[in-house]
Length: 79
Image (cartoon, rainbow, N blue to C red; front, side, top):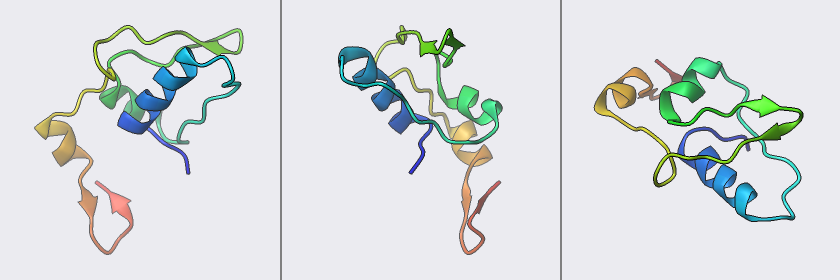
């Protein structure tokens, strides 16, 4: 399936380090959701994505984000 946050960040790093990766999948969701979790933003330019520069995976997970996007059991929805 599609990914965002930590999974997308790990895929982004792998793609940057591997010559055989031709495309990178991302979840079809509002960019604001993606931007909340990623320190460096995915910026498409001429069909390519730049290399991440933040330390580690470059993902920000805070208590506020966990509350903002908490899963609502039984609904399949996030807040």
